[in-house]
Structure formats: structure tokens, C-alpha cells
Length: 201
Ligand code: MN
Image 1 (cartoon, rainbow, N blue to C red):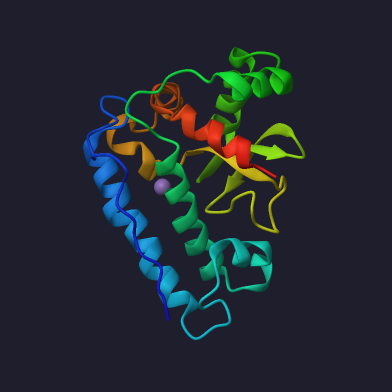
Image 2 (cartoon, rainbow, N blue to C red; image 1 turned 60 degrees about the vertical axis):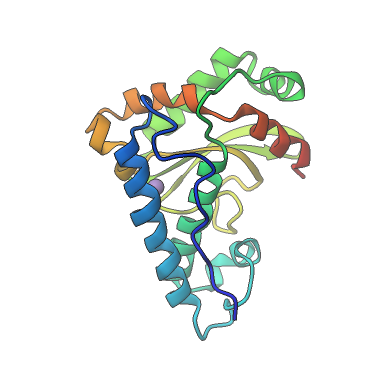
């Protein structure tokens, strides 16, 4: 039976310095993300989730054990988060920039709304930009939930996310989540976000 594995980061641990520091990236990927992978493999073993894709599990996640939701979300959300980061973020352009303007008025208004969602998510969780029936919507989820799950308040195709668990920023920013969020805007892989939007249902 194939098992879930930790994929290598698509860049070096220090690639997002100074905005996201090397030590945080290394612990986040090699310890936290690895633990979700290990715990997910243990949680699905011998259940009817074994061998299923995470997307298939998420569509009916409320029927599975909490450990499968928590660790499955932990694996998928981090894979997705690494993919939308890049050492040198530029600005959204083309169809992505147009979609942001159409949904939020301007990039500045979008940035403000996304920052509010990320800042006000109580405790551990994620902020998301999601494509829903051709519109872009900002949402946030608790713990390791995501918009692909049947339990999500807003369901759709994620095209951007931000991890606001303390483990994502505490070493460098301590309790200053807003400063972490503000710096994160410098390391977004907008080309990949644009690809995700083009493929979104
Ligand atoms: Mn995390």
C-alpha cells in the first residue's frame, strides 16, 4: 500500500529570508510537516481511507476519524503552503490581477481583507483565497481544516493560503502575528497562484 511521504521543499530553508527565517522553515518542514505525514499514515492504516487520495478523503472528511482530518489536513495544507511561496515575490498580473480587482475592488483592498482574515483567525488555523464559481472569496479555517473539506464554511478551489499557527512564526516574531503577515506578502509565488486560478473549477 502506498504511503504518504514528505516532499522536499521546492527551495532552500533559507530562501525566504529575511521574511521567513531559516530555522522556522527547517523545523516547520522537517519536524511539523513530517509529523503530520507520519501520523496520517498511522491514522489511515487498516481503515477504508487507506489508499485514497487526500482530496477524496476531504470530500467526505466528516465521516472519518478526527486524526485523519487533522493529519490529512496538516499534510495537504503544508504541501499547498510551500507551493505558493517563492524567494522573490512579484505582483499579481494578467487574469489573476483582474480577478482580484473584480472581486475586491483593488489589490490594496484585497490585501487588507486577507490580512484581517489571517489576523483575526482565533488560535491556530489558516487564511485562504478560494475560487468559488468564478469569484474569489477570502475565508479562514480552524486547526488543519481547509476549503476542500465537507465541513468547511466556504468550499471551493484554494489558490492562496497563509499558515497562522504559532509554529509558523513564533521563533522570529513571537506574539507579533500581524508583523509576520505583513512580511509574508513579500514571498508569494504569484505565478503559481495564477496557474491555480486558471485551473480552478
Ligand atoms: Mn504549519
